[in-house]
Image (tube, rainbow, N blue to C red):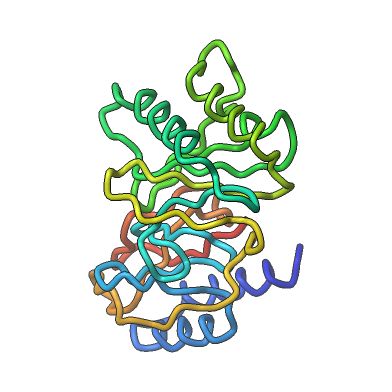
Length: 228
């Protein structure tokens, strides 16, 4: 187990045993040590582990802003190719009860972007799409759009791509050159008040116990640090 994971385990134990007055001070120390970063969304304020790209409370980015498109590669992606992918994804999710806010692709290896790991983002909820869009027969339009991006420029290892499904998508920015975990910790902006404790809430998967954390911790709910 890494030193970071050991630190998070200790932090988890401290939070679970602390009273309501001590918790904000512990969280402040964890932010200063960069074990956690706090969402800059004024109506959220959730705490997230270091390396978490998106807030598990509301889906904002770790840079403190709502998410926008992230186009791949070193060169500007032709607008028609990007539009083709957005159209294919919109059609794919059209029959779903809830359309994701964004779809993210994380490439490690395989047949270009079609082999990437895919996650659908619903606010702060992230749902991995098992198998991604590798199957050409099942995902013909999406596969064709992803192959078009790959032919334009093959993705590099650990490259990250994000396409926002909203019509009000923010302008795209390149992804290469800034992969991986966030380099800074957003400034603390207030707290989320919960029953029994007036302090920022930590949300996310609870690897220590193997179960999901509650959407919002209550008076009888243990605080938990998400660990990978």
